[in-house]
Image (cartoon, rainbow, N blue to C red; front, side, top):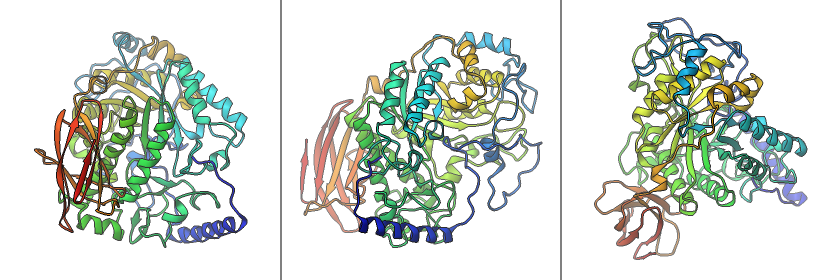
Length: 580
């Protein structure tokens, strides 16, 4: 976040007028805020939503979330301790996959299964949301952070996934974005994120900085008046382009957040700038994205997205839905390349929708056996998380599988297994979990390893503590100390990175230039600042070309030397080229 600078009275007054005008305009765009949509940073709802009896799927009424999402968001209402886990709806089995169907249901037998899995590297993390550590009182912030790190160590964790950014405000000092209202919109007098990093590392915990990517503002009225926010310049009706996601020809209704539109190169460049700034200043072990998606299936009918889709911004000729998925993937690729060029050991992960593609799961509306009635990341949120692993721009996925393993679908173990099966390049899958009772959490830990997952990440550490499960975690689930699992592609890389900038003869960045490597069919697109990253370049000489189809302008081919694990740079200028 940025430290808010002093502003003159006139500027402050203008900002307040703009903020009020924006508030009234936004209020007219959408009045109803639907319930949370199941991402990692939601505050769980205190409502009872059990898996319902088998029945045909029904349409979700307007303004409500689908049943599977309601289940994700509902707090577990049962006791923190149990004697038996719940069997599956069909067959009364211990799990829903061939690897887990014979799991026992009693605690003691599950403990024996778990003992066989100990001693091996495993991701043992937990989400820590902003709701768990922020406060208007700086002293309380310090106390909460230290307490949470003590709790993480006491539970036997080896990593924390700690939220540092909720929207286009931040929870750390920044020259790019203002302080979050959750810290009073002002500098607390110290850097809370640096404190959290130091306290985590002091206890031998990896620190993964948890960043909400696409939310513009979590406040219906927008950021605090007078703050130095992109909201007042890029998220108004006068903005051209307006950076907000559109629906029905206007900014989409407030859904927990106002959402940024990842179809726009300006948004992609801005988010990359924020992440690179953070990564360059903090010694973190990982960058973790949440809200890295669109808010729903039928969005982005804004004129700027449509124009780019019909022009140079769609080199593969994709359909509109797939093109929106591709924009997020391209943005992540550029972020990955830019960050790992300066800090190659940083691990990238993301909290992704717990059902990737329901068409690749058992079909049917009978909730005992099928998934056709559910939502899924690919179809409903334009989130192609598996493609991220195949492109190499994500090191680990943490699917938010906030369902148990018993009763009707969805089943935790079946969904972890599906992600493991589909993920590319050996990328890791860590099961994102809702906190159930002790037996269910033990069963899920066992099942995760049986189906090939490399660890777990419950939502959240504070919830584990509130349910009194920290001693059980340490005695039963994580009784030994192990490192996080190695990532061979980082330790012993076989590919290199090329950071590319495309410029016109006057030195201005070229947007949506088509960049290619000789011998490869892929097309990389230059963003609003002319940048793109090729993160899987083969060692040796790579011949690059660039062209702007709509104008016919081309750059002469240029050869770039690539070394595994290193980043080379190339500037492609229409009429002249430079490589180094």
